[in-house]
Amino acid sequence: MQTVDMQQLKSGEVNLGTSIMAVQFRDGVVVGADSRTTTGSYIANRVTDKLTHIHDRIYCCRSGSAADTQAIADIVHYHLQMLTQQSGERPTVHIAGNVFQKLCYENKDALSAGIIVAGWDKDAGPSVYNIPLGGGLFRQPWAIGGSGSTYVYGYCDATYQEGWGRDETVNFVKNTLSLAMSRDGSSGGVIRMCVITEDKVERLFVPGNELPKFWEGEEVLKLIAPVKKRHEFTDDMAVEV
Amino acid sequence: MSIMEYNGGSVIAMVGKNCVAIASDLRLGVQSLGIASNFQKIFPVTDRIFVGLPGLATDVTTLHEQFRYRVNMYTIKEEREIEPETFAALVSSTLYERRFGPYFIEPVIAGMQRTPSGSYKPFIAATDLIGCLNFAKDFVVAGTASDKLFGVAEGLWEEDLGPEDLFETISQTMLNAVDRDTNSGWGVVVHLLTKDKVITRTLKGRMD
Image 1 (cartoon, chains in turn green, purple):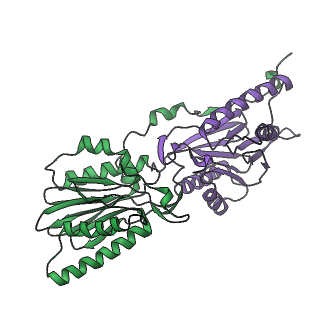
Image 2 (image 1 turned 180 degrees about the vertical axis):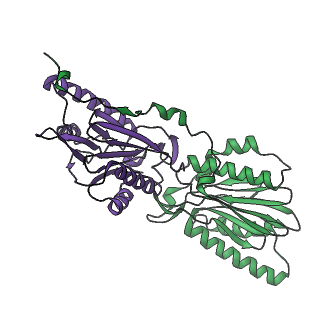
Image 3 (image 1 turned 90 degrees about the vertical axis):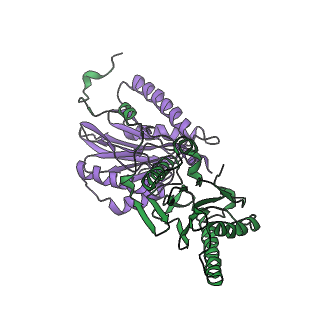
């Protein structure tokens, strides 16, 4: 299970607390993330973009140390641009996953990075690769990551179905992230998603006030001090001994 | 992580013209996991005094019961209700009793103090976890979002705000401060005290 390793972050370092996920569907993949960046308990950025362009039809979701993941993503972006020029065609998602893995595994002692790579290529169609802390590479039909992911494994296991179309997948991502953002203190803000298909990459945005709502325990709030009108306190109420 | 940040939570009290307001969030968490969105941290002491207890949740309950006992004993012995200034001293001594093994709470007190002429004037105070009193004239803050509360309150507060304006000011202060803190939020409750009544409102805020 992926947890944010607080000890590996230096004091003052910025952390992508995070809930991220990517799901494969018929025609492509949907990648999604929350938008909270924290320094300890301070929310340094509440509108972060954790979905990073790696190549035309390959995006990655970043969790863990903000600096580490940004640096890794930049290096992978460079490698894939080189490969494109040298081979004359788009690199596959599998290749992108391997480039990430190489960096994350060989520098595992120094890095704190949990990354999900997803996209579309003409060899495999849509695919999702999960690269957790140790630097292993795991292809999955759907992957979740970040500190918030621990709270939604059950929901995802119970809800996911194969053979979904675009809209059902977008809804699945929206609901999952919404639940994780609600429970996890290190996740929150807005939901950003990218739908990656053969023809295009479509960016979606769900603001905080339009997040799907689940049980928030409102019925229990009535137990707290209701509106009361106070009686005037007079001497008649003094205790007689 | 520090013990004061384990459960999360923040409280603020503000002075207005012939009124006071005290507000808190409703979150109870275990570090980053949110558990409850209805955890009460502000309690009525008398009709005219409210105390807010942000900090470790177990001590919130314990201190609430301790103060209830001591205020009841005071009322029985003195045959009158306790005044806010006296209650603040009671809070201070209760905390200092545990100087070398303290309660992990930083209480915030808000009330309407009776004056010799028979009218009431607004009163707020706060203490640190071992009982050092702070009698501010404008506002007092405590909890995991205290730094952010200071910032927003300093910007929004002005003297002699009426009850409706004070409610708006304290609400905006709370909502925007807790939205920058991962361990506070999940709902806000505001109590507005005037000389003859208390109005309690629950605010709709971000639930992340």
